[in-house]
Length: 239
Image 1: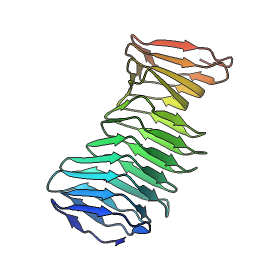
Image 2: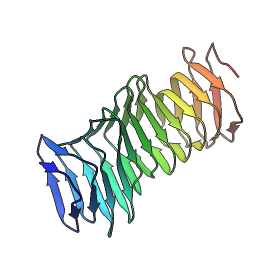
Image 3: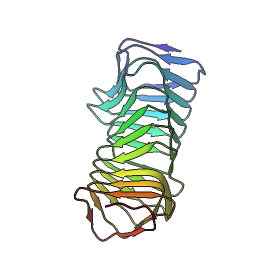
């Protein structure tokens, strides 16, 4: 499978089962149907997939890889676009700008060192974020609900600068978390295992946030703690 230019999918269901699919160039896939990626699709360029004239759905049950250059591959919306990930989204280079109407993650989002995922959508899921090296998720808007099984691991950073991160799972772990804006909410217990940087935003909801003894804690700026229970066990916390 080779995709390039600016093709259009209108009301039809398209299913890719190829294990060698390539999406190249900087064109735009205009969506009004259902795109099922059940195989492997590698974005080697800086294209855009968007809902143009009708509601569209992109279902990834296979592997979607961004690998090629330092540019940006974008999922966005004019009409409503839903992205459902039950497979693997693998960002090996550059940036994936994930800003559809809805992004549901019940699979794996993997970021290589130096890669970025910008997340600005509402959604839910029990999926995991594996952030290697300097890989970083920038959560900028919408409400993302993390259900039982959700996890954020690796040396990279999950940065909340806007939107609402809702911990619905009874227990959830994050290795490296930064709360610079937006809201950390929910009824669940969030444990930070390596580092929490808290420079802004609000922690709220009936749940709890705990920084374990071996983790670092850095507080600056003007953060807010509203109704949530925050427990610092770090031996190296700095305010």
